Image 1 (cartoon, one colour):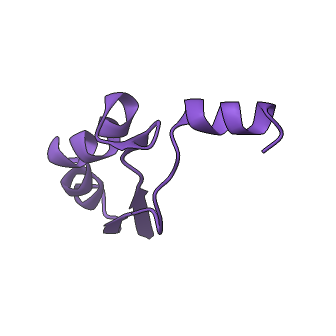
Image 2: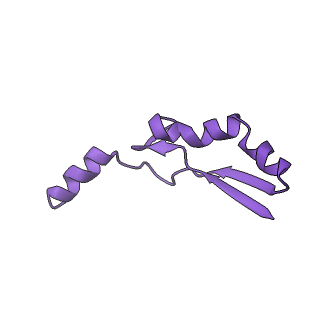
Length: 67
């Protein structure tokens, strides 16, 4: 069975911060090799934003101000 992992290492538009650190830490801890040991064919890729993503506070203020 094939497994495609899409790593999204972002939290509040910051890479590797708080929960955003999770995906790459799982890989560093051996997630891919453990899945492969169970018989899975694993590929992974890091999802990068196509543009700057506004932080949550900026997004919330913009939407509440009618912008």
